[in-house]
Image 1 (cartoon, one colour):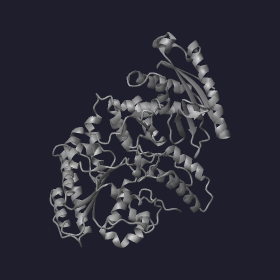
Image 2 (cartoon, rainbow, N blue to C red):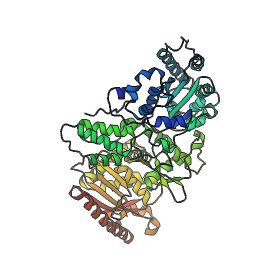
Image 3 (cartoon, rainbow, N blue to C red):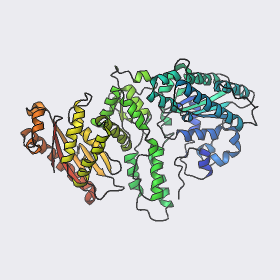
Image 4 (cartoon, rainbow, N blue to C red):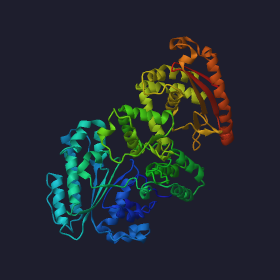
Length: 590
């Protein structure tokens, strides 16, 4: 059995226990050349902590005797830099700081954590540094330790992990508390000012900071303006994350280690990982895609242990991103950005990715420019780069089906704010997916979803809004792969739900929809008149009949193409659906 490092960010432990390790140490020399004070941004659970632990093991003066064991078989071990094992290494991980409470309470938590980290640092290097009294103020303790370090032959390398973790949690909960931490003489800003001062000949020679977004760093302003932003550098695009060929290699090693012949094939597993954990691009100058390592290892670990794909493809460790989407949803422009992603399935286009921007800039409701919001979604891994337009605008799209699931769930909350309504959707969805009965689903959409849409002026009142409603109500990552506008039979179907090929349910149908929208004015009827009509009579209206016929002609072509592609494994039910304004629905099965 291949020992996978799922959930393990301890580099030394991974190497010493012989776990699978995707070598990233070749980047160490390049990182050194980029500068001495660096800021590196990546989404949550993207391997940042493991990278910092790799740096810690490489630069720590106390691990010199372990160099061959740790790095001998890795890229940097074949060609080490002069800085190997030259530093005192101090690590701060601000995910340990509680974000709860007032400014004073969070200040106490921050101060307590930093002092604890400094106390452990002194204990670790007690053979190299004198005994130092821990002060009440962690900043004072830090400055005194720097004084002792300057008396030695070794400078300090400070590694800060999750620099914005607690601040981001405060941001989405209480803007005033957040401001009290990072603005003026806020405690977090004052601590970072001390770090900045330490780089100016006070013993701190190198600084590497990781986080999720640059928003907090921007709000700290002069507190940390020494950092060089390297997170969009093309040479670091694959620093954290797996390349496609590395995933294939891991799959082959897992299959080879299985004493029995597993039912799955490398190609089948690769396709599933591609569809659900598709590649991210972090640099506009790079064409290389990388996959989220935590999601990939989650899948591989389950595949190896149980010899099948996981039932739930969203790792619960990433579910916290929903909180960020709810925060974005509080902002009008943010709601529209979320809706656009699912609604029209077109890339979001912006002139540039905002490198530094403050919370106030992002929340400026008067701003029509979506640059800040799209950039924020990009930093959190909810959008990724997908090339440029002919006018050199950057195109941003959801990276994979797992992220689309997060969008769909958030938009369901917009459309069905009452939890009981979301639960009530389960029965008509089951009737459609298990028995092909669409009437109950149409009635639910009319009664609950159309009512919500009519009261929300940010929803496009056309077929895109209809597609969004069907998309978010039917999205189910346990049973289906849900595709909006997939290319099928030399055309683009509106919505296609294909049973997961890695674990197909024998009782569910594959579903295909072609959606049309007719304005009330074109029908010459009021909404009240339409609501009084029977659904079968609505289908006899001449304009509706024409739309149904047009949709069916498209469905024939799409169905034939899908049947040719999937053969007898396909259990397809295809429907043409016409919306009469946002009042009524008519559907006909092919």
